[in-house]
Image (cartoon, rainbow over all chains, first blue to last red; front, side, top):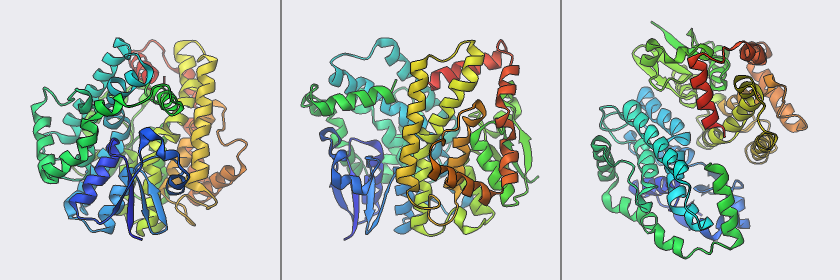
Length: 243
Length: 243
């Protein structure tokens, strides 16, 4: 049995893993884990990732979670082109630095906007109060400013002259609010150019394919039953994580 | 000019870097960044880490932040014993997996307890409300349970038979609340044994030395000038981050 990747492309870290594997022609079986249908709670998936999170990987008997770790594993195992995860210590450190910093900043804030604009209003039947929404928008912009000033600066990519895992992870996270009608890079021409550059490196067709579900988010949300126990559970969890 | 490490040993990620460097006899100049008096906002430190966070590293002209990235950089550059960051892909993946997962779980929750029990009551003049405190304690225990069930299981260490960066980072984080009188591993004999094992590997003397300041954290906290602008700013940041 070959490599299996357990994914739901609504999830940013899943998209990063999917795009990276496809771009590098890594053969894998796509195992759909539909988060809105609660498939992460199935017994089978529990054997792959007891934390019930996607993405997850199964390679023979070996299983793991955490997209940042999965990406590094794939880059090393399949010997992808050096620029994705450079062997040069200092360029690699730039990639590792961004991938560590982003969890509680770009990743969290991008997700929060998506949850506040897209998910919570549908799941709870009410909009998020204006002051919380404004704060969330501001917090994302603060994170993006740090991204621009510290991680990108005047370089074409985070680690220098070539695209790496850091750019891919950053871009998919910044796409998360876009399906709800908010482009967080609006008004930031330098970052918009960076985004286009990364898309070109990855391949526009692959990038768009990976983001198709997310872009049709509103349609999906219309089909959700706000009263189902699963939906209630999801709403509770989201309200706790994204205060 | 040799390696410089910018540290405040009250900070968990700083302790991980300090212990790792000392344990492996990596020569460095200890550059104190006293967070309690706002030294992270100095012009000099801004040139090392514009994000104003510790730990930070300066190696010639190269500067970086983020403890997880710094630890990997040091492990590779100074060719520390393999078990710290194994060359074997799957063992390395176990380390990377924990180091990615811990940011928003063990790290965040351990820090939150320290803030709620130690800093906030002193800086605001009032205890944190009981329901928020109880929730924080519960959330840390939930994270610790996941740590025990998924990351450690029945192994002596996270990545298998030998200690690694993952164990070191986990342990310094779990020490953060201890100076406020709460041992989060109380009642968990398996984890307490793991803790003693990791301490032995690192060297008890080094471990205790690194934690000396944090064990006396209440003395420092009680001596803080609540009205100083740096402290006020810090308080606001903490209240926002740990709701």
